[in-house]
Length: 461
Figure 1 (tube, rainbow, N blue to C red):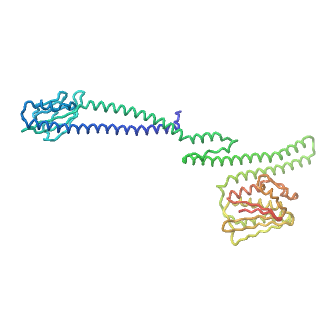
Figure 2: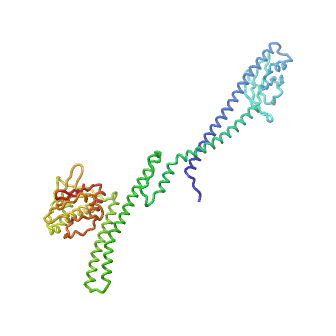
Figure 3: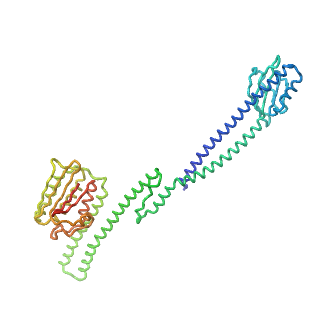
């Protein structure tokens, strides 16, 4: 399996490649500029030397245009210009003067050049490279061809040495750029390493660990915030799962222990059939209670996970309340409790939500109210609608709930000592209010409880 490059290595290679490309282009531009500079300088020098030779020829012509010592005059006049190579010949290619170091095949000479026009030319003889200028000048009553040239070998040696030096320093600069790129990349990616180190600390026992999101670059802060939000959700889900497991184990331990003890006692010695039957019936009741509790726990867990997938339907609150009154009417009548429904608004009172869940929440509150309302007491459901919200309140008469108990009413398996011991609803799982709260929160609502002046009110908003 091919090993993947790290992000540091990739960025470093990218920086090195970019630096090398920039340096190579820069070196190429410098080399071209140097070559152009030397070429332009040589052309200007040749033009100046051509003017010098032209002046010399005019002076010689002024004395005697056919002077056989013309070569001596030119040689004397060119003293101090040893770098200049001169060739003077007639249009018939008869050599009048020729520098000793100049090598130029005469077949390369263009004798048809226009008068006074200087034409650049280049040629190579062996290992010698020349840059020249050819021009036709007047000499007395006829024209002569003048060729001036510089040996380019020194310039070429300088250019080669300069290019080698430039390449060497370009490589050194690329190496230094690579080292700096690696250092800068490591420093730039340091927040990612910090996030990695922090992520390694996250375990099932340390879900409270969070990624640093304050002293990190803007590009990484979004990632850190998203990871922290994910950890918040995971911690919340893990906490609920742990709490669910603990509560199930805690609540099942007592009934299972009771069942085992009761069964062991019965089996300790022979019993009559009625005794066995009584024990089995008692066990069935306990199993039913445990089944109800498990169903409630599963429903509660499901409700807490369905915030964003609720079934939306139009729910008429007065109709739902009336249906619940009809269902609980017989029990309320047996308990001598009066039920009353009132609405402090006109027209329909409708909300959007999951009908079965809302119905269960209302049923839990009403059954809880019946369970804690004494005989001759009253239970009233009040529905109110404003521009801001819709509320449903379940109000029952009876003993007040102590203020210290109110914050715990919605905790799982929490029960109070206010229940009527003679009530058929007295035996419960302690999950009704917790389920109700979960349902209301799933609908983006709120549940508020107050207890004073002999009345307890659960208000759904």
